[in-house]
Amino acid sequence: MKIYWVLLSLMMLVACATNRPINEGRQLLESGQVEAGLDLLQEALARSPEDKELRVYYFRQRDVVVARRLEAADQARRDGFPDMAEAGYRQALRYDPASQRAHAGLRELAAQGRRDALVKEASQHADRGNLAAAEARLRVVLAEEPGHPAARDLMRVIEEKNARS
Image 1: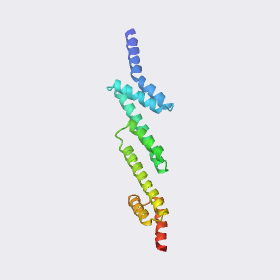
Image 2: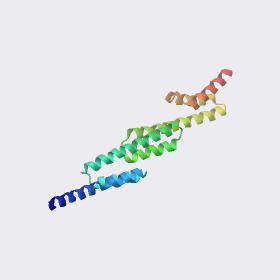
Image 3: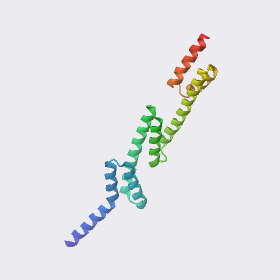
Image 4: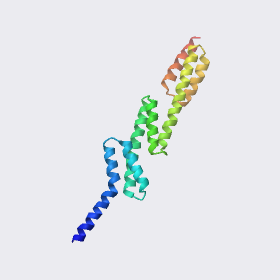
């Protein structure tokens, strides 16, 4: 009977030692220290790649964190905060470098920046009276994003000026 209790105690100690990274990672994640928690779990997984429980827990938590970062980045992009959006996409890529959604978000941010720069150039051309150059740039923007508000507004102003001429 004594041997039974000794073996049971040893099995419990082994089980606790095996789950220690999970427990520590969970505590960090629950306390809001997301990066520290994921980093701890990732390091533990690198040391014990055969630990299936750790692997499942790490990837589940990583996927939750990445999804939250992507949602926040998408919202920041929609709300017109490109720097915040870029930071969110890059944080997602830190844990999931293959995230197609994060890469697509960064590509869209770059395209939006290029379109906004073209609208700014068009506005400058319009201010100097070069309506043809302004209109050419706006047509490029509107071909890519027909609903671009600033491009549509400026195009309307240019069309009114051309109609009066």
